[in-house]
Image 1 (tube, rainbow, N blue to C red):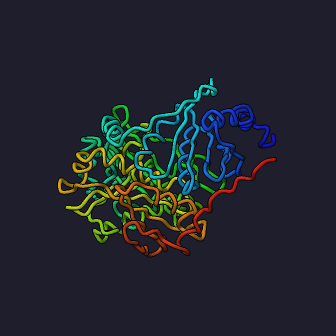
Image 2 (cartoon, one colour; image 1 turned 120 degrees about the vertical axis):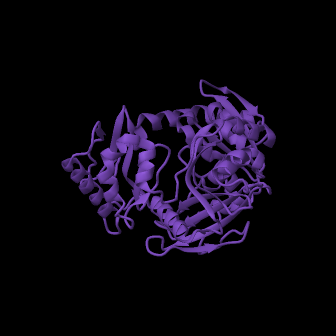
Image 3 (cartoon, one colour; image 1 turned 60 degrees about the vertical axis):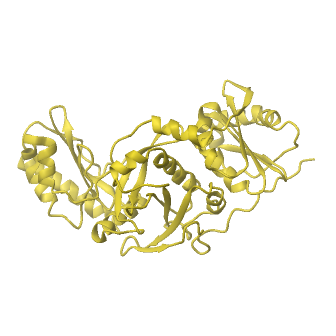
Length: 429
């Protein structure tokens, strides 16, 4: 089947063909707009010398969030009009109080696009109140190397003896396995990949060993099914688990078959560097993968939540290569921290207070630049209340190198791509 014949692509083509121009004429009735370049398959772009209009379609789902990212990149000297499905517009509206780009939003019901209406932008106070009311999502991973025997006995009580031989063996692999325990689970990772999890399960314990590939290649280890324990591990079971874990460790090493998820490898290096020195990115407190909420009441994980008491909390967002949503993802977690100072203080330190700061930690892996062409216009369109800075990282597989830039200083070439130019809209006869 050709790509254009895929049912979803056909529905998208039908929607844009039937409704895109009508939506534009309703939202901007007095202006003549022309089609622009196809920057994304999820949107239609229209505009002129004064306006950029971006139309999203219902089948794009959460990708409709990217409309604002495109608008911030393209609308530096123009009025931006976003036309989105109403069930996907709320997240964009909640972000807009902290965006300086001139943006308006129109929302439509997918069953009746002709009923498109202008959407009201809430105030900062309203948005922060909504986010605060969503409440907490839990605690982040601990970066401290907790004594595993003590922790396992605390979590599993008498069942800790069932896995004592396995946990004791894991503790001998300090250079290969990093403990990343969370909640009631014991978790170990190798270069950012989970290779062992032990958790409570139906009156016993469940063990997940090896790398849980969603679609393993022929040269990658297929993980064994979960092992549910109701008594102590046998020697045979323990030996099989060790062999599975050792294979996963070997595959994760440079040159091994498990070379994916490079961003996880970077995060692992950041964790190890912080544990070794107690300070990174000028921060002395750091907790990884902190659960929070994103606009639209969507769950999210802050890569690192940190601070240097008595200073403000820091949102550390790591990304490799050119990422369209980098700025908005950092803003999302900034908004959550701004709305929940008591949760942040309880998680880090009572001495942590003040307006959050976003730390963008970026590097080049598959590309030659760490920062894409969209980012400059996006970060410069953030409200003055939002403080941000960049850290460019290199050599995270060997010896982590960090170049830190001043607050609100955008890295230039060669660290960043040339900013995206203003769009050209060809006038149609």
